Image 1 (cartoon, rainbow, N blue to C red):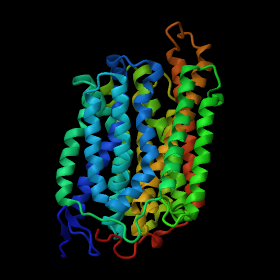
Image 2 (image 1 turned 30 degrees about the vertical axis):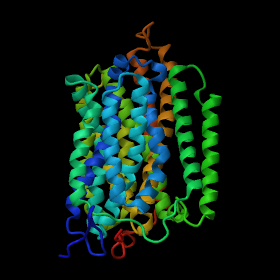
Image 3 (image 1 turned 90 degrees about the vertical axis):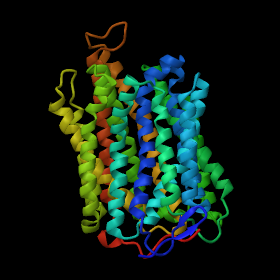
Length: 504
């Protein structure tokens, strides 16, 4: 077996299959898991963080928003930096920066320091995420092996959030909320040390000048969109009786974001070396995968966010118990991701993506019938298993289809688009489902005899959460329909021609 070329910074990918690619995947998977876990770990710790640092409800949302703004805004730029500067180099910088930002969050003494740490986490995450996926893309060129590699990614993407709920509950209850940040440091250290020796370098060849106007437009545009939708959700929570979608400031940010993204599209069609080559999104199969991913990201927020609220506020579960109650979803993802990785090369991506979307939608729909007295095994357990099976069947072929056959120059950009549309979908889903949930709670509170001065009763809260779960299932169903209509690729379309990585 051919040994990879080496440079002072470690191995460099060549046209030959990289012999240590599976070991490299294990290293990359660690940091991908770190990014996925971080969101739900911090969500579980929000009450403890807010109480300790005296963060008011009005500004508490910035613990989440500061991360999503920078992560979503810098993703496309991060993907292009990975392509041109070197995917391994970008991965290492992203991992080190993410660890330092996490350490800063753990020692935060006030809200400003914490918000700054979260913003830095998002910035370095926007480097680490696309670089990780791009490395997987260029490491695995055989269709069967690539399906297995994306099976690992799909299991992490779909099940990591539920594991984060459990880990966040354990750390918050038995250690302190600071450890929800500090836990990233040793993980990143191990990954960086291993990556230096194991993960190979690769980068795009040819002209590598950066599209500065495009970078500015898309970064500001995506950040404005994410912020606008987040403000809608915040407005719905602070004024349940008002019209959250009528908030002028939030609408202004959304409109400005759309205008900037439209201007970015015009620029990308004209510049010589675009930040986002339009061929990536105009391809029918890849565009369908991206649109499906948007719906999945929007609907998925309903699963973990509102189920977590139901478990803790309605059922009275502790953070650890709430995390344990979310694990059936992870089990379903692991089972389905393993099966999907074996089935993609045999039957193609479309049947799995459609079936996965229907399973996931059915899981959320089933849980939309929850009541305050529903036993866990009656609806929650089968609903979570269906959700997990659906997510596992969806993520593996979706990632494969969105990234297969990519020109070597575009691996980072294509990876960034996949993550960007998921981020935008999650932001839209948060705003939409939060608004729907709060409206339903307000409407149900007047008929709930347990509602009092302390707030809505259990029945009203359950009504709000289950209404959001129902509309989350609709979003997942739209994702399945998108796959059915737009995806035309068959198993014969998946193989990549030859190696797709070149020496840096």
